[in-house]
Image 1 (cartoon, one colour):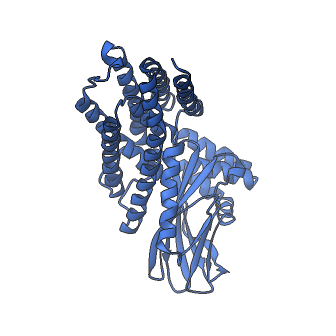
Image 2 (tube, rainbow, N blue to C red):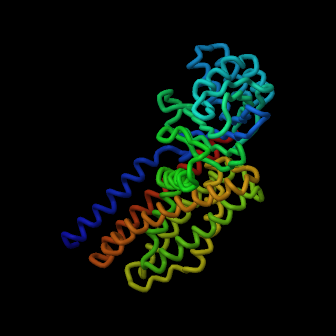
Amino acid sequence: MSHLARRIALGVVAAAITLLSCAVPAAAHGFTSTAYVDVTAGEAGHVLTKLELEYDLYVVSTADTEKNDDLFKAGTAAFDARDTEAQGAALNAYADSAVAYVTKRFAVTAEGAPCSPVKSGDLTIGIREDVPYATLLLDWTCPEAGEHEVRSTLFPDAETFVKDTKTIVVYDLGGISGSAALDAANPSFSTVLPWYERFYEFFLLGAEHLLFGLDHVLFLLALIAGSRRLREVVLVATSFTLAHSVTFLLAALGLVSVPASIVEPIIALSIAVVAAWHLWQLRRPAALGDHLDRSGWTRLGVVFLFGLVHGLGFAGALGIQEAWSWTLLWSLLVFNVGIEAVQLGLIALIFPLISLLRRRSPMAGHWVTGLVAAGVAVMGIVWFVERTFWNSP
């Protein structure tokens, strides 16, 4: 192996090891939380908000910051029992603490003046992505009409229970409707923001989801490692893109809904299968030649089928379980564009290195892509077992 080929091989392996070492968590979406907020105009001078918050996180964060041990005991016991009625009762028994936690971290202003919130009705429990979510209704009295601003710092990193929280807001105020994605870097938005600024947040949200959703990244890495020519990687990437776009949009329109308990294990299995496919091809003597027969159409079909499942995973990242407004649907399309931007970037970065290595030293390319595929396959199997058995009811 030449000196250059050796350096390229080390670079490819180092990049793969970095990804795999970061991939230890079994659920790529398990370290973030998403809050959902609907904001609508009420009677004159009033704004109505419906907040949906992940129940167990809500209970633990509220009990910790409001120093309410009784809420922690009652709330966690109800969560462990998987009793939604008891969960609602626990929150309503300590409603003052539950509301105080939210109103200290979520605010509505009108023309720069703060609005005053009052709880409207009992807290209720629903299910999103197979986990309980608490719904809190607040009625805000605003001193002025006109431009509204919504700010959310719910479940900050400083509380250490999650590493990141996204707040997806859908609003219809004063004849202005739209959607926004809030996080620690961008905690607020104004209803007079131009449309392209709101869409940019969803683009970043999609890009971050693929980049830090290591199960999807490893699936893509397995596809790249198993493609010898640019035409192959373009075809499989296109197949994957078309498939996950189909199910993502169907989920956004409320036409498809599959529980995360089914989607997540299949995503893990898809990683192992695609990586193992490459390992199976490498065992053939022709694998070192320039005319490797990979049963391309079969591979494309398999990738497409798994892509359909990954699309449901992307939809699950935003908790899509029902038809949303067309306004939000456009934001979700931008979210998908963000996913594609990162996908194309990874292909542009990794595939040329692998191609150069194969040209310089076919044997080195054989072993490096084999090692990468083996590592990806192992992670896929580990995740599949964890998501199927360890996280099962």
